[in-house]
Image 1 (spheres, one colour):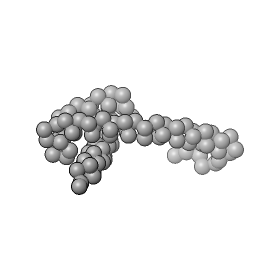
Image 2: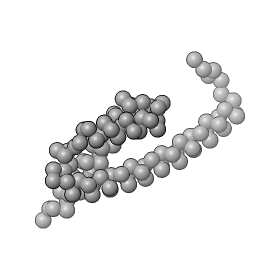
Image 3: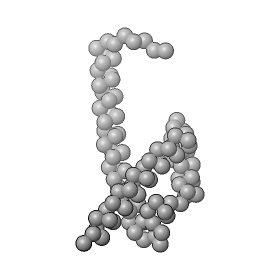
Length: 103
């Protein structure tokens, strides 16, 4: 349990840390966009792409590598995060491909 008392210096520190979180979130969004663009290119090159072409073994290895860099999150949490990231990227790539092939 932690102290619920908020002082001016605590309020300032919270604001400073939240600004730092906002900066990290902006960089994370840019990296997610970059990842989605690269993954879309991969999907266009694969014989079976998009959701049907998911490589669960590769995804498992990816999560294991990431867990070594983010031990606080651990493999189980990272697996859920990356499943969402991969699914969102595949959905965006599939939508884009569908729009490009419409007459």
